[in-house]
Amino acid sequence: MESMEGHVGKREAQLKRWGAKLDQLAAKAEKAGADAKFERRRRIDDLKAKLQAAQAKLAELQAAGGEKWKVLKTGVESAWNEIEAAFRKLKD
Image (cartoon, rainbow, N blue to C red; front, side):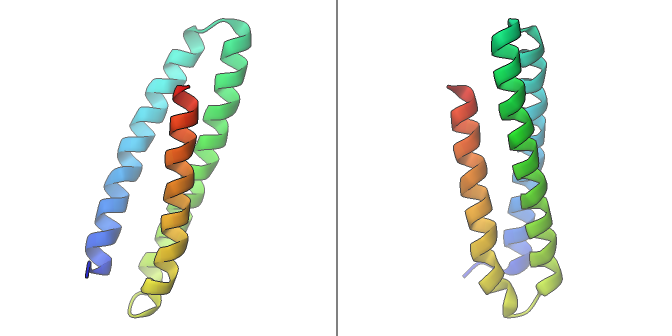
């Protein structure tokens, strides 16, 4: 079974990668036409909100410690699934 520290470390690294990817996508959106730019910008803003929520859940997970983290881990996993789905949608 994975430790809390290992789990949190992996998630923090993933958040950093996603943040960098989001910055790249935002830069590409700025170069798009007006309609495409608006839609991509809306999706990017939605994804930024999801990333912030995931960061908050991760902080909650870290603060919980002990056995409680196993319960909170489910919420973090759910947030991760939402972000991954949003990234896939953004690429479409």
